[in-house]
Length: 246
Image (tube, rainbow, N blue to C red):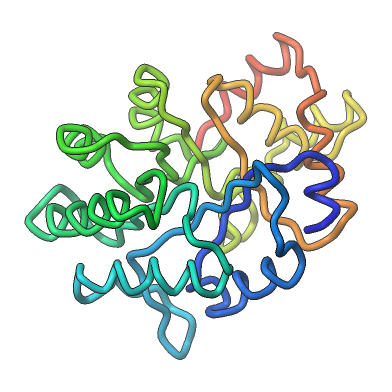
């Protein structure tokens, strides 16, 4: 994490339920006091059971408690953005209204500077924008899974950051549909890159408002990820990758 900051990373994606109850503590241990300009972005809206499964937050009012827990464990007075993470929510409903109300109240109280959304539909995004500004949207998106393309296009049109999770394919899918793709591997060989670098470079090239958050647990992978900004795929390779079907 310290190496990431040295290389110019100024956005760290986290959550108190990562681990659970591990990620924030590690971030604070490594980086506190935080360098100026470092944006700590967390998310709320879920719980983890004893087996590690993801569960929706039972009571929207608990969002405020979880925001405060993130502030406490990270050791800050305000978070740059907190994403409202939806689980198994097909369309806006009364619960979504209540969740947005808690989030806007937390922003108005100065606990968070911006509100984000995660795992949402285009309908959710448009609905939320009627009531509040949205700083970013964090949805699954990669070469093999472009189901959130309509959400990405809406974000691009409105100047909202789009933060794809699983940019290298889901860690739960075997074989990996992105890194195992033959065209990705061929492009990596042609350009002298890793398949992961090709996949990330393609994702960055899709739209100017994409903000990558590829997870890494090794300094070598971190440095490979940072080098992606300098990779030029070329029109031929981009067209080939654009044709990859999920």
